[in-house]
Length: 176
Image (cartoon, rainbow, N blue to C red):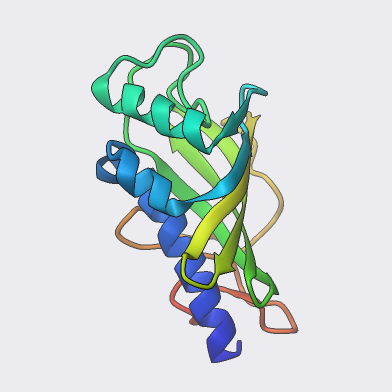
């Protein structure tokens, strides 16, 4: 993988994992720094979120006041307590010099959700999450056959092997 591509994928993965970190989720300022002003999410519940609604919902989640339907991504389940979020099967693909596509599976309180994120880079603003979609999956569903990847947390990441053109790989840019 070209070094520049590794850096771009790594930056997007780091941003995505920061958004899973409870300390970041509790800070409206930090969440807004990571979300593009034009951010849109299609949540696992089917609800459409924008930057302001996600920021408000995460503040409620952090205070323990999230109501039925949970917050963005709805990993907590209807009215359920928010537990830690883990990410597995994390794969990053450089689509263009300023666009990275990430896919992974999140799990929280036993609920698995397949996730897709588009990160875009803007001069002066850096990498920000532009689009995100979550689709609930059966916990027993193994998903597509891929090499096993280690779980990722806010402290680190794992991803699939690179493609022939070198645009996919682990978060640290190495090949498994």
